[in-house]
Amino acid sequence: MTRTLTGPTDHVVVVGAGLAGLAAALHLLGAGRRVTIVERDNGPGGRAGRLVRGGYHIDTGPTVLTMPEIADEAFAAVGTSLREHIELIELHPAYRAAFADGGTLDVHTDPEAMEAEVERFAGPAEAAGYRRLRHWLTELYRAQRHRFLDADFDSPRQLLGPDLLRLAALGGFGRWENGVARHLRDERLRRVFTFQALYAGVPPTRALAAYAVIAYMDTVAGVYFPRGGMHALPRAMAEAAQRAGAAVHYGRPVTALERSGERITAVLTAEQRIPCDAVVLTPDLPVTYRLLGRTPRRPLRLRHAPSVVVLHAGCDRTWPQLAHHTLSFGSSWRRTFEQLTRTGELMSDPSLLITRPTATDPALAPPGRHLHYILAPCPHTGIGPGPADWHDLGPRYRDALLGELEHRGLDGLAAAIEEECLITPADWTAQGHAAGTPFSAAHTFTQTGPFRPRNLVRGTTNAVLAGCGTTPGVGVPPVLLSGKLAATRITGTHDGTPRHRTRTRNRAEESRT
Image (cartoon, rainbow, N blue to C red; front, side, top):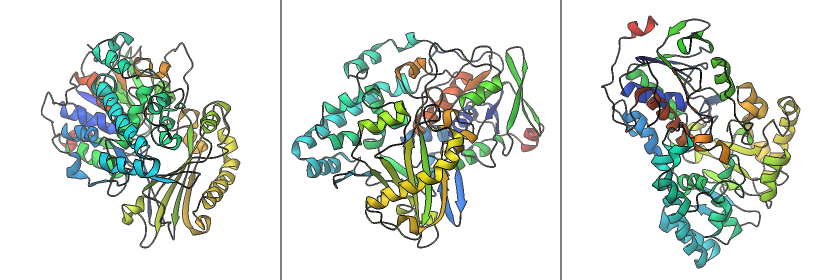
């Protein structure tokens, strides 16, 4: 039995209108709570934001949606559905992998299409290995979905049970790379099913095989893109929350939390004091702990995931070899992870993600124009260049990346750019992200499950945390689940069934807060 908040919880203030905060708000509204959302930016989204330049509509955060049923749970809490608000387009292929030897592989989530593609690429033995790998990934997901991913933890003892034994029997506590290698001999194919370890912040040679569930989401469950871009998701969630009665205040950074003993009694901004019975805090952990006035002690120092440099480029042309998502792998692999997680160097032989959202939704750019999103993993500022270094390093690294991509076949890329925005760890730091990374705490063993920073903080009895720094972790599906889990701590419901009918309140009443 997991802990829930004690005392009244009628009015909940959610700090942050990112995916975690909006998911929490929808689940709270569905359980009959009165909800006020306070967001520092001028609109919803948080990390899943939107930038408009020269007619280009740029998603500044996640580029795809996996496991859309998790987002749908949040909409269902207030009596609507994801597909009532958003047109989802399944991507075919989900990714295109381009290798240094010139080979390419289209990654399909349809089993027959992917098996045929693997056989074309690497032969029938590897196609048979893919079938076994797909089954293993699916079983890993089934073992974890409800007991580990969608669960609050108060103690490691809660792990004990048949699901833990099942996960162990599947090899979930071995190494991710070894688990994939049992099924695939081709080193290039292994990369396709292990590159997701970057999201977990741990090299696949050291990451728990349990985290191969991320590869399940990417390569088995389906990859989707909302028409209008990923920012359409938080925008729709915010609209659904407001229709269900939430009061939403944009452009209001929270300056302090008013306390009475161990309870938060009000959330303060420069413009207003908002009384509350409970609060959900979604900023990055250092910001949240500063507001609470307490940083929980840990036996080991928190380790952070690598960061990324992102170049958003609006171009007057595109390149036919680019799919919606193209993974451009360098020759180096193990050394790349060593540089990103241990030595703090920039990738000497980079592996890059190029996203071309206008391949699926041309309306995101002016007519005849194309939007490209170039993502280069880099060390976080705790082991690599610091924020101050990036002010000079950023433009040089941007030029180096463009030069490398031109060398890999995107000829004329630099000259084709009309509008651009470069984001480096200095920008992530300025947004309040610890160690200059948007991926928060790495998913090491000591930062996984019940060992991850918890969503309850001792010394405060009516505050709950949500977001990628707490349970269950990084990525769009886990972040949405973190909002649901935060709501569960408040309402005690967890099965998606509201205890009360949603109460739509008069806006005049909300304004009095």
